[in-house]
Amino acid sequence: MAPKVLVILSSHDFIESANKPTGWYLPEFAHPYTVLAAKGVSFETASPKGGVAPLDQRSIKNFQNDAAASSFYATQSALWENTAPISAYRGRAAEFAALFYPGGYAPMFDIATDADSIALIGEFATAGKVVAAVCHGPAALVNVVLPGGRHLLDGKEVTAYSNAEEQAVGMTAHMPFSLEDRITEAGAMYRRAEPNAPFVVVADGGRLITGQNPWSSVGVGEAIAKAIGV
Image (cartoon, rainbow, N blue to C red; front, side, top):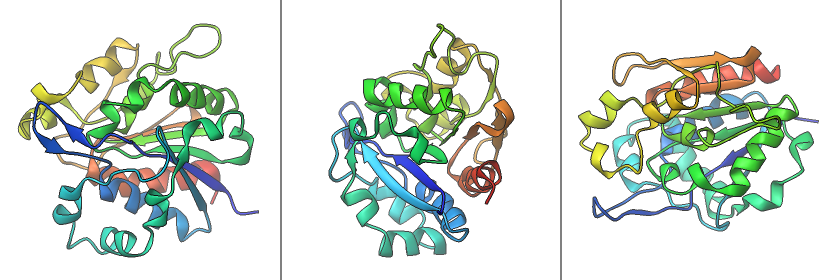
C-alpha cells in the first residue's frame, strides 16, 4: 500500500489588525505534494473547522510563474475544499507515514493553540511517525508537550520563518507571537539561514522536519520522502 501523508491546513482567513485576508500558502503545500506524489504518496487533509481551508490569495499571485504551484492550484482543489475536522484523525496515526503542516500566516492564529492538532502531533510523535512543517507551519509545534511532560521541541534543532523575515515584510506587529522566539522558549535550538534562502532542518533521526520559508518547501518534501523511505 502506498504511504499516506496527513496534511493539516488552517481554517483562519483574516488578520484583523492588518485588515487583510490570509490562509495557507500555496507553494508550501504544492511543492511537497509534487515531490511526494511523484513517488506514489497519497494525501488526506484536515483543518480545525473542516470544509474549505482558505488559501492565501496573495500566494497564488506571488507564485503564478511557478509551474508546480500553478499546476497544483489548477488540479488539486479538492484537497483544500473538502478537509475533514482534525478531530476525525485522532487515534489514527498508524494509518499514515507522516504528518505535515504547511504555513502561511494563518496557522499562527488557530493551529498553534488547537487542542486536537496538539494532541494529534503528540500521537504521531509518540508513534515514531514523521512530523514536518514549513515556514509558519511550525507554529503547530510550539505548544506540544509529550507524555511525561517534555516539550516536543526540547533539545532539538528547528527552523521556521525568522524574526528578520517577519520584519522585512512588515508583519511582526500583526502576529500573535514571535515564532522564532516561541520555538526557542520551548527548549529548541532555533536555526536559520539568510532571509528567503532555502533551509531545511532534519532532527530526531528524521522524525522532525522543518523548513524556514516558502523557498524551503521543495527541500521539506524531499526530506519527508527520504524519512518515509520513498
